[in-house]
Image (cartoon, rainbow, N blue to C red):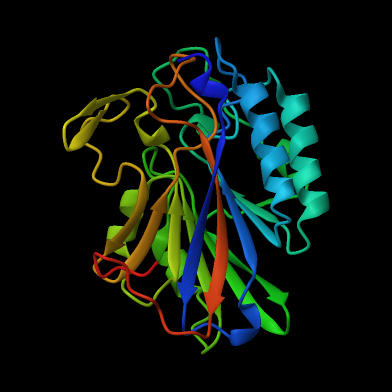
Length: 273
């Protein structure tokens, strides 16, 4: 379990966006989440270094971080160093949203809020209930970001009001909590990216299913979902909280390969692959 907490895996997926501009086909987008730097005890700094190394090896055009960067000032200098490495390597930039731990909201009493300026100083653009657009290959990628919903910091209507709905624009939503997708409509975004659950962190494998101890009632626990025509990916994230352990739930980075301007190929369950 100690080893698994540092055994970061790379997950490769297609981000199918047939309505997005064909120029964006082949774009590489990396999702990272839940570093939880400063949580103790943990091996989160070591896991973060491995995750960033793997992210850089993917040669990302764009890096997206879905919250819970840190739990306090301890380890912040190393977090900043790794964020600068990402910012230097991603030509379209690094964007992120805050999670509940970044606001100091945690069961652990020692957790302190993260200063957003410490993240932005490293080249991370935090989307505080807003959007940002970047030009790539003559087309537009728009990233929307919803702040932490558990603490009531979210304003999804503001994000939706700022959307660029012109044909060809690739739209991605970042949120720490996946349930935000239930308040969007099909067509708002090509995909929603979330974190928070750690994929269960410690899971009990039972015949036909796994019990996720981090959140026994999570509607969206980990992996890919088609929510009534709305695509969602919930990453297991990189770090741990409460216990420095993982079981049957390796930490991960997710590398999305954009398939734009092409028809979606259906998987065995009918969902895009």
